[in-house]
Image 1 (cartoon, one colour):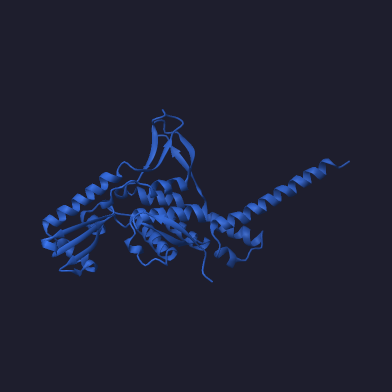
Image 2 (cartoon, rainbow, N blue to C red):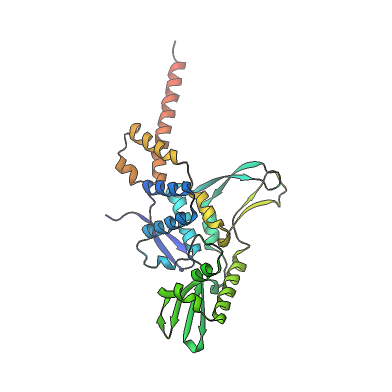
Length: 292
């Protein structure tokens, strides 16, 4: 039997994709990687997760970082929790305060970004079509601001004499003409200009004037994207073992069911137990009041 799927709209591909659920065991392994705090490993794990959850789509490697971000935030909202609880530091007073953001609001904002069409795909033609290069948004979630790394990630297709040589792009980047490299760098600057003023979150500090906001920018080159995803998915590792212990020993739930459930579903079982215990305690207090 096929696993349950849900859909999400991604602007870069101009379509909806089906996504499988993030199960408890896979989430635990993701948190282990986040706890280890190696951004390259974490980014690879997120990519592997996208391949697993979007297996019906054969073009996952073409997804932009923006598409990937929207999908992962949708996974977070549906399979874990719809809100994001944050501990924020006021930039003026340095006092800490708590804030709650609705992930659906962030997803909607990203889906409705009014970006120029050529930021998603830009085709450059040289020597009467002898060399054609297609540029587009970077697909990686974690990028170091090194020239060749950035150039590599924005090149989507390379055709030489009508032959697709994209698979060899890492070997030929050093040999591209100066005019081609100049056009690619101009696209990167154009990409940056269009995204630099966009924030994933803007939070008002209660300890500062109304125009003082704590912003989380949508800046791929400052590591803000991977850092934001780490905040969204991070959780105390010990809590996973506490949940497993509680569900197995207190609720007598089989471990196979735990492995094949989402974290949100397991929270429902826990909340049922809490509600039941609250009703029992309420009944006990009532009986004690009726004692002679």
